[in-house]
Amino acid sequence: MNVIKGEFTQQVGATFLTHLIGLLFSIVNAAIIARYLGPDGKGMVALVLLLPNMMGLFLSLGIGTANVFFVGSRHFEVSTLTSNSATFALVGTVIGVGITLSLSGTGWLSSIVPGVPVWLVLCSIPLLPIGLASGYFTAILQGLQRITAINVVRLAQGGILVLLTGLLVAGFPTGLLGSVTAYVVSGALGLLVLSVVLRREGGVPLPKWDSSVARSTVSFGLKGHIGNIFQFFNYRLDLLIVNYFLGPGNVGIYSVSVGLAECLWYFPNAVGFVIFPKAAATKPELMNIFTPRAFRITLLLTALGAIGLMVFGKPMILMIYSSSFVSAYMPMLALLPGVVFLGSGKVLTNEIAGRGYPHYNSINAGLALVVTVVLDLVLIPRYGVLGAALASSIAYTAIFFTAIGFYVNVSRKKHGRSS
Image 1 (cartoon, rainbow, N blue to C red):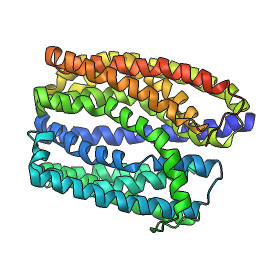
Image 2 (tube, rainbow, N blue to C red):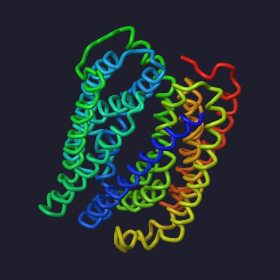
Image 3 (cartoon, rainbow, N blue to C red):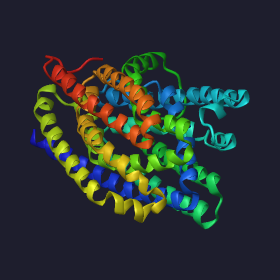
């Protein structure tokens, strides 16, 4: 138990430090976009990045979740899972590009993101294959518990993104196109490095079809995939609804509120990222002792971080984003309670998935999505961006309490793993 605790603490600490540095990169990157492109430009960039991320999530089929579980539990070889993942990334890309071009040709793309140039959305298409392959390969390294390698790649990618954004948006002002190009190039370089690291672990990042592995990964992945989709919409559907009712400028304001509030998730994400493969590779009896401790510490630290944001949030907005974004402060405050609860809940949801029960998280996220949609449609037209924040905060709180119930159920099972 002490060995598990020591190794876990080191991995969480390193991951959290990486996330903090990544946060600094993210803040600098967002500040450049906000100051040089303004609220409308920042809102457009947020919406353009949202689309390939959303499509990639739909097409990923939960293969990343399955990769972590099957690598961590030693069900399949790394080489087989890597080539399987490359195949799925290729297929997903073909389907995604076809859908995007069809939407563009029929004019529906303009209806999905009104106010955003279609040509800019099309320029973001390369982010789809980059995101799919990077997610799959990172998950394999996560299952191997190669946390340091993942952290190094993420830091390098974040640093490159800031440099490119500074060069293309501030140095040689190419506007919206420069911002999207920076994301595409930095993502491609990150994928290249991931592929090299994975080859050293025995991976073969070239497409090759293995029907038995494909069936197993899809079967397991789909159990949590629906939940990932629901959770994504819990996080980002409000951006689309805000754009529909209030326009890209308010999306830019709200994206600042969300970005600051979600800074509190850096530590919980680090804990969840490490605890997922740990739960897949560790006896349930040991996790029953370990996880509640990690949960309580995460809740406490996240709450302390929220207090800090309450005090320093407005000065941070003025300093980083300019006075044009000061109205983001109140929505940020409304988000904080839900962000604190959901942050600590991430410890439980990742542990549940690591034990082989990702479908519980799908049920949880689905219930929360219903709450999100209903409250968004009621509150956003009446209260604007503040209404979106209140809706999300309530939905996040619902996820937290439901996750506790599911965790108690899973931890009482005699066999804490299901495949």
